[in-house]
Length: 169
Image (cartoon, rainbow, N blue to C red; front, side, top):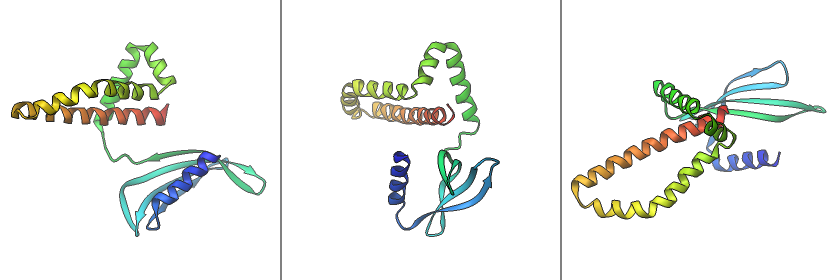
């Protein structure tokens, strides 16, 4: 309960006085459940990639309803389309090939992120000076720039996978 209150208090501060939620659609379920389609606006102008859907499961507390569980799905700024199916196919194949590792990962989803963070902390001090030294040579500068873009793309894919697993598992 306190975490939810802290989150919404922080959200209100972050939004400031010009950003507002605009409700597009509200659907009520059989039990005390509600689905809300929403988007964010800044001074009555819709903010791109700031749409979502929230599901609220409530319980009666006397005359009031208390929110007991919330699922929030926000629009991704990246539209992977066909790429999402390829990524899902890759992940499922890895899980099928290494079920023991998959079970461990699914029990502790942050383990993969911690692994890459530790790997970066370990290798970073060795790689950064090499990149700085070799960026003076034009072909190597191009090569390192190319691989930095590849690393950024790989990071984006890992973040997408992490968010997918976090939401659905």
